[in-house]
Amino acid sequence: AQSVTQLDSQVPVFEEAPVELRCNYSSSVSVYLFWYVQYPNQGLQLLLKYLSGSTLVESINGFEAEFNKSQTSFHLRKPSVHISDTAEYFCAVSPAAAGNKLTFGGGTRVLVKP
Amino acid sequence: GAGVSQTPSNKVTEKGKYVELRCDPISGHTALYWYRQSLGQGPEFLIYFQGTGAADDSGLPNDRFFAVRPEGSVSTLKIQRTERGDSAVYLCASSLTPTSSNTGELFFGEGSRLTVL
Image (tube, rainbow over all chains, first blue to last red; front, side, top):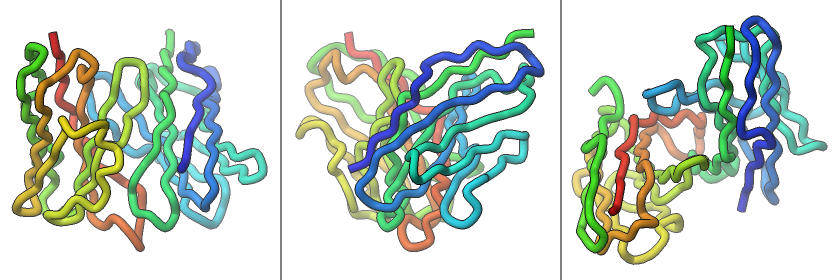
């Protein structure tokens, strides 16, 4: 079984400041790692993912996450946030050999202030 | 359709009543998932369909919960004898390929918010 811990339930941040959302996981098997985002009044959507290869992965809107196997972490960062980044962010894992059955963390609500 | 469609968007019912929640996945997606999201928590896996069959129903909390996908497209989540603890947002997601070429991209609907009074 897998589990995911997101250490921060809420992160307030000023516009143009950097943000880091922490995610740690546990698993007895190899996993794939994901960040999903839920904007207000919208469904969850994939932000970025790590399947294999380079441990640093990037999204099209400036977020990046680094897979650290030794620390079992997959923290999400953005060097400069915008008001439009206000959303809830969910870290998730799935067993590499078992399809898309995702286990989610509890979520981190990011509120970007002007 | 353009995206995953879930109906109703909101459902208020009384304890003990029967409820059905419907999910219409993206056309051509063979895999369909149901998740439940309680207030302040992340989505929790309930059941996964590959085609018409339930490939994994290990997340269903008890036998009051049941889901079907008779023609491999639309799915219905059925909850019998609802309890106040069933109140949550029920999310449906679909994907193209569920196993060996896992890409991890599930396409989620906006959810059905169930409130049991």
